[in-house]
Length: 133
Image 1 (cartoon, rainbow, N blue to C red):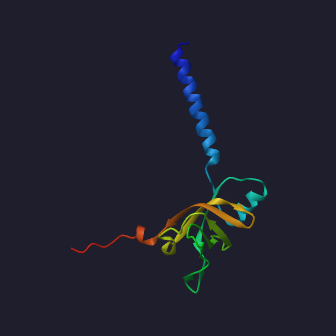
Image 2 (image 1 turned 180 degrees about the vertical axis):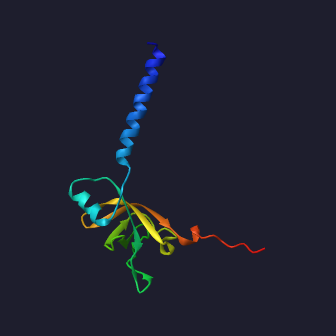
Image 3 (image 1 turned 120 degrees about the vertical axis):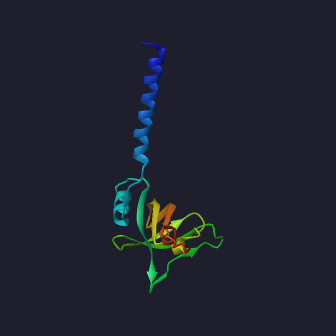
């Protein structure tokens, strides 16, 4: 076998190993109950939880910003109507209060869900604007 063929096989094997190892890091979509259950079993992978901000009488409630405005807590309700206190170690995203749906990526630490990242679905981004001529 030529050296170039051996080198090619090694490169392909390394690429396959990288792909396989990265799929284990990909988060899965769960609700808060499932995320807590995974954590109790010792699984510390990050998961995705879909839900909405807690609302009382139609108004968003449960958001508490840190004094330095560099982190905040909020209450989120998942698809099974389970409420959970969530901590995000970054400032409040601009469109958080207007979001229709929230996806948080993170893990449980004690009784708080730590959101490393927040993805927002805002209704204004997905509605078509009518153009009048």
